[in-house]
Image 1 (spheres, rainbow, N blue to C red):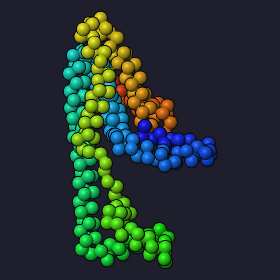
Image 2: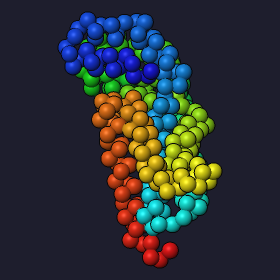
Image 3: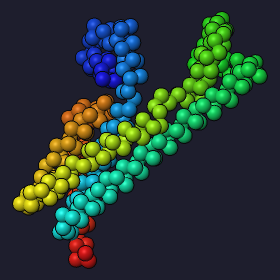
Image 4: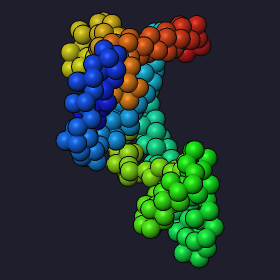
Length: 264
């Protein structure tokens, strides 16, 4: 996984285990980490947060309808409307956000490249200023500036990260949006599954809501645990945290539905 090497390093720090820390910083471990990151680990955040939002919002809809004592048909209509409407909305939002960040980075990099080509003296002075601020001086500063500015790509990369604080976005907008949408729909379908099954098995309808609660809380804990790959907190804490958040959202929705059921 993307965080395997980092998790190993964190465990070594907690245990103050020098040997384990060294094993997390070998050339092979670092190379493997970078390769796994390029293969798709960067989309874990989109998958996890898409799934969490999908299951929480859909379960809130189910709870609100159940609180209002409306029919299972209303549950399915509102549930699927939320599932695909919000799923598409989230995907589009993620697409635009990722694309905007990528476009902004490219525009700023083009500007820096133009400045390097047309006024290198000023860009060299900026590199010098950046590293002088970090504490480099004298011959060490001169040597460092010369090394960096001798390679145009390194020069531009340094200007982007050190001067502007910008890191190139490695995710593609389409893949990021797709990851969010499919995770949202797949996880969000969980609270609706018992009600879909009750169409084929009408006697199951009496247990549909309680089954939905059980399934939702199980999946919510699992997805919340996977969230630890993004937040880097302990998996069981992350799982419980999402259970609490999901439970609160569903409880509020159920209460609102219950209080307003008289107007339906």
